[in-house]
Length: 351
Image 1 (cartoon, rainbow, N blue to C red):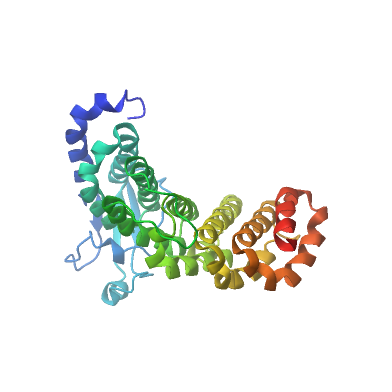
Image 2 (cartoon, one colour):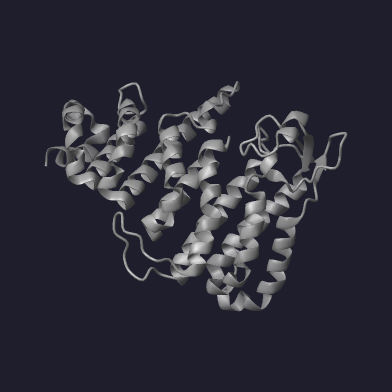
């Protein structure tokens, strides 16, 4: 699809290709149950997450295990039975390719893709907690592309304002209501850091595009996830690799997660306005910890930038925090890594 000509040229093939994509997403081919009792439905993936990730290097079969962690708490029996199964690498590649092709088709054909949206959302929901992170990450990427498509196809009737919801198009609301719980759950339950970062980026754009009305029914869960991430207590932030090379890669993604999390917090403040103050009260201490000299330069810069952005949105509601923030802001005037953000922060705090 990457080399596809204009979207109109592809329309005659859309039905045929989407039929294969939907069938691939729905198929359980390649998932091999390795438990004595074979009556478990492998499509019940919401009970099969746990610590299941593989690096994808196995040429034929990727063995995984479920039951160690049940994020939904829906099936205690399954968790106790410690189900084991394997995923054929070829099947994994097929699903990943199908999801990426979905993104390419949406970008190319635009609105005609909407006739398949309901079925695509159903399949994405089914595999959003797939045992292998390749699939979970690809699902998040499809969700993100769907947001772009909905904004292009059904633009907002007017610009949203902080704390003021706008009425979303019926199809946009259907899409947002379907994906939002899955995206938020990725933040605290997923073990794969890049998947978490991509989910944060998708949520940031969701709020940027559609404003407070899009997330009002899930604001509590979203804020709780943001607090967990900025406190570095999400599941993906508590895994320690024994391999030195992996440790270095993990450190890089730790920075990426904080970067994406501060962006999401800033956007949440934008859509809430001064009403974000109670959340900021819970975030200020962990954000200030990120400005310590012992933290990576990128963390310090992103944290002070986030504080500045939130202060800007709080307006007069920031006054109770001035005594706490102002000395820290002044102390950081010698830190070149946060210079631009610092100037903004100073303006917000003292105005």
